[in-house]
Each structure stands twice: as structure tokens, then as C-alpha cells.
Length: 249
Image 1: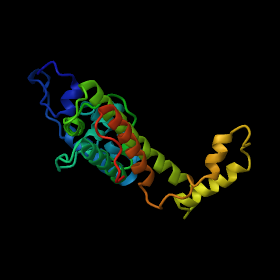
Image 2 (image 1 turned 90 degrees about the vertical axis):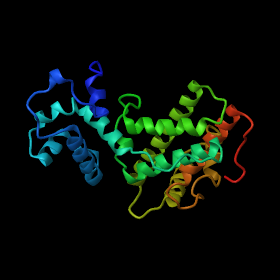
Image 3 (image 1 turned 90 degrees about the horizontal axis):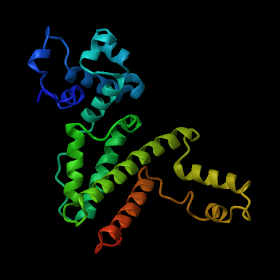
């Protein structure tokens, strides 16, 4: 496998070709990436820059480029290392429960490591952990008649929704007044906006602001996420056919 690109070689921890080997380094990809993930877990994405990783390891930043080709590559290596999939198998209760479990597991991962959804998406999933997530998603969809293209699009849409929901939750929490909950923040938003929204110009928006849609949700961190997830699964059920909206959701 001498023609495997360097990035994929590092991502999958493949050995370097014999002709490229030089003096043995005291570092390796595993050490550099593990250190970066540990720094990000402790202090967020900004705590895991190449200079800070180098300081933590007691080396120069330039010496890290042998093991992580660029700052973008370091981020992609970190993402794969930090997204180890759950060990449990996909539910055998049907595609919907399997996909729900898959999405909730990804949501939980983003709550445990909030820096993960903040990493820009530079390329499609490429590492062993990311491919394992993809494989679990395909397994959940295996009872359906969707072709491979539709299955891939379904997983791309769901993972994008989970990622964006996690980012939105973080950003809205940062924008609230200290000690203010989600419902109180939504009510204050709706009451303020009603003062300036002209119901003749924006009739549907004004009706929404006067409705229970804002400020009436339970004070749970994942309420909006779970409701949105069920909406997406309802739409996918129509595409799949024979499995409508979940009456228990």
C-alpha cells in the first residue's frame, strides 16, 4: 500500500513505507493526536493549536509536521480519534429506532465533547472511527429498500442536523442572560419582537410569536433536538414507505 496518501496513512495508523523511514522520532501520530484531544477536552478547540500541543509535548511546533501534515490535518485526526462509536449494536426494532439511537448517540458525543461540532468540515468522513459510525448508520437502514445513494443522503442529513443542533444549543446558551433558562429566554424574545413586528406585513410570524410555540417547551436540554429528530424521521418514513410517523413520539 505504498500509494496510500500520507493523510490516510496517518489517519489509519499505517506504517510508513520502508524507503521513507529515517531516524526514529520520539513522537508518533498517536501521541500528538492524543495530546491535542486531551487539551481540547480540557480547554476547548482553541486550547489545542499546534503551538500549544508542541508546548505540552516539550517540542517545537515545526517538529509536529512530520506527524500531522498541517493544522487542518491535525483537526481531522482529532475528530476521528475523538468520535469512537458506541460499543452497543444497532437496535433490531426497525430502521426508525436504529436511526434514532444512532442520532442520539451522536448528540450525546457532542454534549460530552462540545468542541467536536466546532471543527470545520474539511472533507467527507475518512477515518476508521468515522467510517464505523457510517457503517452503523447503514446497518440501521439495511431493512429498508432505499438505494445506497438515498441511504448516504439520509445519514448525511441526520448527522448534519445533529451537528447544527449541538452548535445552536451552545451558541444560544452563550447568548442568554446569566441564570436564564431556555423557556424564559424564548418568552422574552417573543414579547420583545412582537413590539416591532407589524402583523399586517408579517402575519404568520406575528401569529407564531403569539402562539405557545415559544417559551412553552419543557426545560430539558435536548427537547428541541428530539422534536426535530422525530420530524426528520417522519419525513424519511414517507420516503421509505410503509412506516409512518411514530405515534409514541
